[in-house]
Every structure is written in C-alpha cells, then in structure tokens.
Image 1 (cartoon, helix red, strand yellow):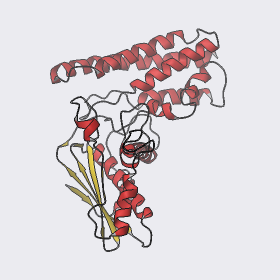
Image 2: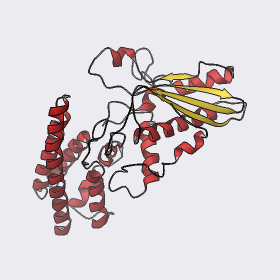
Image 3: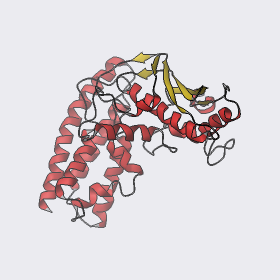
Image 4: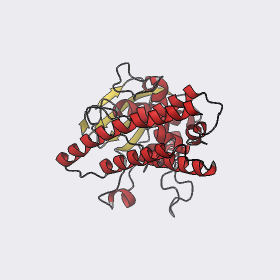
Length: 318
C-alpha cells in the first residue's frame, strides 16, 4: 500500500522516473500525454482497452448501457453530492461478462477506485490486482489524481481540495526497460488526423515539415519502443497495429503516386512487423519467450537501422 498526501502533486513525473522512452524531448509532457491516453473516453484502435473507456463509458455499445455507455465518475460524484459520508462513490474497471468469462481475455490490472470526503478534502483509493512499480505506479497515481480532480469538479454546492491518493496492490512487481505503459508514438498516430500521412507524404514531395523534422518524426516513431537489454515486467511495448497502418499508408501513397521509390522501405516495414508478430505470439513459457525475445531484439535493432537509412536516403533524393 502506498499513499501520497497531496493528490495534486501526482501529476508531476518523479525526478528519478526510470527509462523514459528514447527520443522523448520533454519527459513531463510525455508523462502527461501518457496519463491522458489511459484516461481517454475512447480506447485507441491500437489497444484492447484503456482505463478511461471503462470509467467514463462502461459497456459502451452494449444493450445494457447503450451507445455512450455508463459514466461511473459522474455517478461517483453524484453519490457524494447526495451524501457526504457515502461509501458508494466507486467505479469498477472489470466486466465479468466479457473479462472473466474467457481465460484469454485482456482486461485492466486497475480494478477498482473509490472516492471519499474527509472534512474539506477528497481522498481517492485505487485497487490493482498487479502493478509494475517503477514505471506503472507513477502513471497510475497520476491517473488517480486526475480522477480526483474530475470528481471534485463535478460535486456542486461545496468546495473541496485534493486529498490523499492511495494505491493498494496485490502483486507488486519490478522490471527493467520501457514497459507497455509507454504508448508508442506510432500507435498514437493511428487516432490522429493524418497521423501516418505526416510521416509518409514528405517521402514523395515537399511538405510544411523540413527534412530534418521528418527524419526526427520517423526516429521517434521507432526509437521510443526500441528494445532494451532487459525485458519489461509486463511485456515490451510493440506498435504492431501502428506498423501495419504505416505499411498500408506507404503502399497506398506509393500507388497513388504510381511510384516505387519506397519499395525497399515497404519491404523492411513488412519484415519488422512480422518480427514483432512472431515475438508477440511466442509461448508464455519463460524459456521459449526468452529465446524469442533475443531474436526480436537482434532483428528489430538491425531493421530499425535499415529503415532510418532508407528514409534518410529518400529525403536526400527528394
């Protein structure tokens, strides 16, 4: 169990936060964007779920809750608005119908959050079935601090200050390397307008982005999930959906321009995607997964170098 007395302070990245992804120029901005991604009301197309979808639109699209789902944070605020001492200001992130009925289903390690008023402060407690402490815990605490401020803003008729943030974790673990808490920049581009085109179009004709800016964007798209020597405790981040989307955009744009100038680049993109697919589907057996990871690290490291070379060459030719 960990407790922070001032929930408002949770929004700041710890001064000794480990393994900020390579290529990230502003750690605090990356930290805030990561927290915001996990609390977005709609999950990205690159992810099975996020936390905000479960909290703000629980059951969206189902018969029980309708198109927009059930906003549990609004309900928690309403419970405290009606009765200050209420213990009903809770929100759950696990749906037994979809999450527990299938042994292979993916669902959040963040299970439950409860809000409680103490005098003029709103305290929040989060329960986690498992938590990777060096990397995930600060993100989760920042999420709880964000939810704390959301509930405060929704309670009318009184002024509350952020109180404590408490986390309870049944299985705390530790690992090295950037974990899956880090949403690869390439996956983030999927939900952004023209996210992939911003990378691809400069390879065919001049755009508002300079050649230096374009190369930097390509590097960030591959550097921030670059394999580390030590495996992350909850799995290495891999933008498999983002890699497929980028490959598709390269193919479509090349066809539009009736050009084969990025043919070699497309081939390398297919190879790196296949390499990630192979590692992602590796057996859960520790020995076989360790062997698969070693191959993945070697191949991805080589393919990244080749992709950067091809992008640089194409920009120089243009």
